[in-house]
Length: 226
Image (cartoon, rainbow, N blue to C red; front, side, top):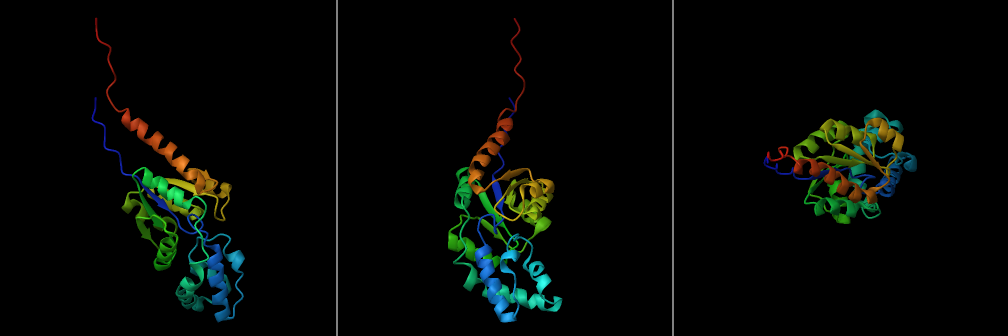
């Protein structure tokens, strides 16, 4: 029999906003506070329906181009006072992270969010995360996933799918964000789950399907001659 290869350590990447946490309530509060300072009535609910793109993209339609950098900086500055306490973990988030740990794996959060604010959410909610990488978006997430040796990336947005595919890893999408099942499938995701509550079961099946062929490597058995 051939030697059985050592299994590759499990590393699973997760997006943060609307994948692990429901950022919308806090994001809306910050938009309202920023709008009050700037004299702009931001349509907060509409702007948070499909969170994912960088903040400056979201502010673009409502502010002059030259005002956006300063507005973005101010948003991030006042964010901790308005957006940490009201933001909960999404149902199944802790269980999804625990499922990776149960299989001896590592968890990597790769998010477009400002790193310091992302860390505040992770710490406040006690999310069991090994690595947190912020300010990366779309296909830019691929470099982090490859660096960390991830084999799966879980997100809610079509641009999360783009990052996973660019990294050559399994794209798992959840319907907790603003993207529809059809949009995610069209983007090329490999798996669509209703929510993170389905992730532990999916991971179990995925690992069984991945490991079983490796454990069966060997030479064919030749019957003895008589």
